[in-house]
Image 1 (cartoon, rainbow over the protein chains, first blue to last red):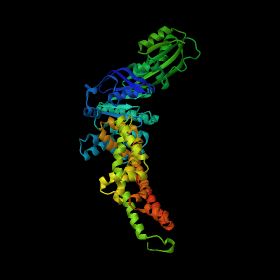
Image 2 (image 1 turned 60 degrees about the vertical axis):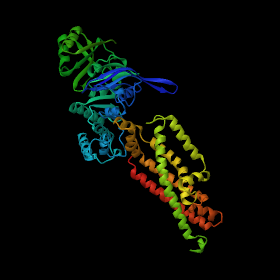
Image 3 (image 1 turned 90 degrees about the vertical axis):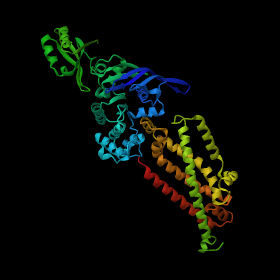
Image 4 (image 1 turned 120 degrees about the vertical axis):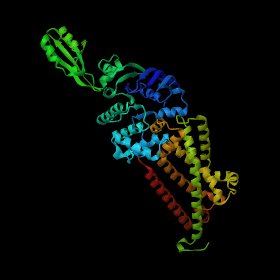
Length: 333
Length: 225
C-alpha cells in the first residue's frame, strides 16, 4: 500500500545542513494500523509528510498504491492527496467556516459533487463521528476532542483509503485521547482504512497499532508487531519510550531479596490462567512479587510479572512456566 | 463668504462646508475602492512570494518589497506633485477630485498591501498545510482558505487605511481637489478663521469615528475565534 525506500531528507539550516531522515525503509500493508514512535526531533513529522509529499524526500522513493509519488505532476499529486486523508495535532480546521462547511471543504475543492450532495455527505460524516448536532457551530465553539473528530470527518470526506495521523492525540486529555483512538480503530475495522500514525506516546501505539517502527535520529532502530516490540523491546530507545509511558513493570526489581529474579510475560488467554500458585505449590518455590501489570495491547490481553524466586526447584518452575506458554526471562541484579 | 448661522460661526459658509464634505467623501470612497483593488492583490503576492511560503520567489518578493518601500517613503505631498504627469495620462486631468484619486491610491495601496501581508501571515500555517494535504491548488488555497481566514485582519487593515486616506485628502487641496481638510487649511489656518477650523476638524473627527465604528463592527461580524 505504502512503500518508503531508502528515504533521506536533509534541511538547510543556516550555514549547515540537518539530516532529518537517514535511509528509511518502511512498508505499510493495506488495512493495517502502522505506528511510528519516536521522541521529538526523531524525524517523525518529516516521515509522515513524505507519504503525501507535503515534504519531498532529498533521496529515495515513495510509492503509494503502486504509484511512484515523485513521478506525478501537480494535478496527479493533488489527486493522490485527495485519496489520502490527514489529521493533525492542532486540528487545523478553518476558523472562518462552520463545522459542516469544514467537513464539506475537501469535497468543495474536489468540485465533483453538487452542492446539496456535498452538504448531505458532510452531514452523514458528522453523524458518523457523533457531531451531527454541532454542524452549524464554528470550530472555536468546540472542545479539543470534538475538533479532532471534525478533523477525522473532514479527512474521510473524499473516501480515502489511507489516513495519516500527525500526533493526532497529543493535544488531547487522556479521556478524549481514548475516544479518538477508539474512533480510529472503528474506522480501520469498518472501512478497511489503512492508518499511519506518528506519536511520542507508547500508549497510543499499544491501543491502536498492529505494527510499529521506532524512530531515532532519522533511522528506524526497531520495528515489528506491536506485542513483540512492546513486550520484548530490543533497542534502548524502545525501552526508554516504554518506561516513559509508565508501561514498564520492573520498577521495584532492584529491591533487596534473595534468590533469582525473573520476568514472566503472559500473552492472550494464559494471562488469566492461575499458573503462578499452582507451579509454586508443585515445585516448592516461594516467590515475592517485585512488579507487574496486566493490560491490553489492542485486543490482546497480556501480563508481565517480575518475581524473586526462593527455595524449592526454581529450574523446574521456570520450565513449567515455559511449557505453559509464558515467556521467561532471567534478570541479573 | 455669506455669514449664515449664528455669530459664533460668523465665517462659516455651510454650503461650502457641504460641498467640501461631499468632495472628501468622493475622494475617500473612490480612492478606498481602488486602494483595496490594487493593494489586496499586491499584499497577497507579497505574502505568497515570501520566504517559505506557497510560491516562494525571493527575487520577485525582493522587487515588490523595494517598490512598496519606495512608495511608502515618499511624503504624500511630494507624491501629489510628482504624480501630476501620470495623473493626467490616467484620468485626463491633474485637478479636482479626479486628479487627487490616482496619487491617493498610489500613496495608500502600498501601505494597505503591507497590512494585508501581515494579516495573511497571521493565518495559521497548519490551515494552509491542511488545505494542501486535501489536494487544494494554490488558487484554491488563496481564495478558499487564506482570504476567508484572513478576512477580519483584512477588514481591520482597510479601516486603518481608510482613516489614513482621510488625512491624505487634507493635502489634496494642493491640486485643487477641495474637501474638508483643504477648507481647514485655507480658511481656518491661513485666514485665521478659527470657527471654520473648528467646524471642519469636528466633521473630520466624526468621519474618522464613523469609519472606525463601521470597521470594528465588520471585523467583529467576521471574527470566529
